[in-house]
Picture 1 (cartoon, rainbow over the protein chains, first blue to last red):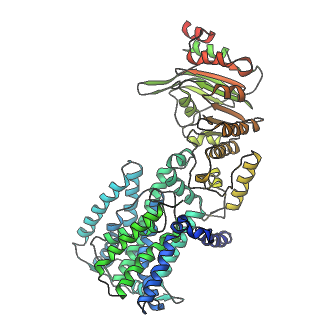
Picture 2 (picture 1 turned 90 degrees about the vertical axis):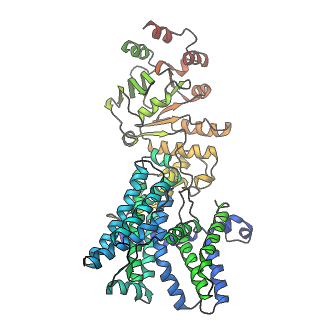
Picture 3 (picture 1 turned 60 degrees about the vertical axis):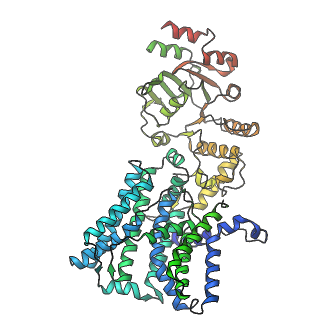
Length: 336
Length: 272
């Protein structure tokens, strides 16, 4: 029964997402709104064209597959960030919550020889707990989200280092190895995981009552409260979802690097926020775009991939990422 | 205190034998040092448009919030359909069919008209934990509601951000009217509107007048005379009197609001 409802919803989900690109007429091209609403897709297309011209290795199926695999962790993180940002919040703790989740998995499965499943469950639980704490302090104690998550960014960084005495823990597991390297139906598992999360996030935000409440809570918290929406719960749940997705990203990270490194990942944090902003979501909440966020994450990863192929010094990468983000923020001023 | 309540009830504008939907008796509410309500007593007749008027700070908003579950009164009783009710949350009032059009409208600009109409009352389909929005049903229903009420919006799929002030107001009123099976409370529904938009909203109130009970808070006495059957006057946290609109006029109401003229209610007050 629910499957019957699911299929058309899924289809309309995709068409609905593409509807952001409305008015593809000749007149629309001169309208800045047209460009800003679809900025990330044009940006991605432009970057792909430029790198294809500059490097014959770029537009090969092997490279595109590698590119998407390396984008997967950022896609999952950015989708987590999306849930928080749509409610008008922000999660700065991701930069240390991600290594925290990874380290929990390494600590459990390598240091204490837990079964892998238990280690993965611990990673999810640990990251989700950080989300619930963030959300509860922000929504119930009414402390600014920026302050709270900046605090947990520091706390979880320290706790991750303490747990493994600052050392990287090697994690050997055939399951995680398969996850990182193998494919299903010719598509790498990482890509499948990211895709499934993206579709689920899209359905949740745009096709459920809960999603509408998320949008309403971010769009006009007082109105949402007046209409009887439990905005505190909604906000906490957004941080919880972000935490769970950080847990998933942590597992992917361990699979990809065959180890758990406790050091802070501020570049992943910045990129996760950048991907959401690039995708056209409002940092003030109330507006979301899963297609945009995914495209944003892929765009940022493509820049890094292309620079590597062109042997541009990797020190230029954050410069480029920063420029792209500022440019997208400028464009977003024209947004409806 | 009680005698004062009686003084107000003697001026009950409800006709004898007419059905009372809501009765408020001796409501008191204090915020710290401020006594916002000091014994408010009034009643609403079913199917009528009742107005609540009073100066700024007279306690109108506090009284409304006690009737919608936003505030809990310190003392006094609220009877709805003859039964005493205690609203702890806005949901409690809503469950009994009491809807409110808030002064800020409580619309989410980034959501569409139909999403706002169905906000927190979404129609879903599917079984078990996986239930998706039934958008088609909500769009159709919102269209029908707005059409029935004669509300003109470009499309129920338009986001509220694109609507004019009057259109927004109409959407908020329509939402309340369509869900408020028993009572719709409107807090200054036309305060920020132009002449034309005000007319449209007033038309909306008139249209559903049959069968729907409306409590309207307004500064605009002419509007009260145009729309309401009954009017209650609040002054300094007390209901100082009620009138049938047909038997009163603006001058009398102004006198009651300000308490300057020596009307009989004031005499009753001072007699205490």
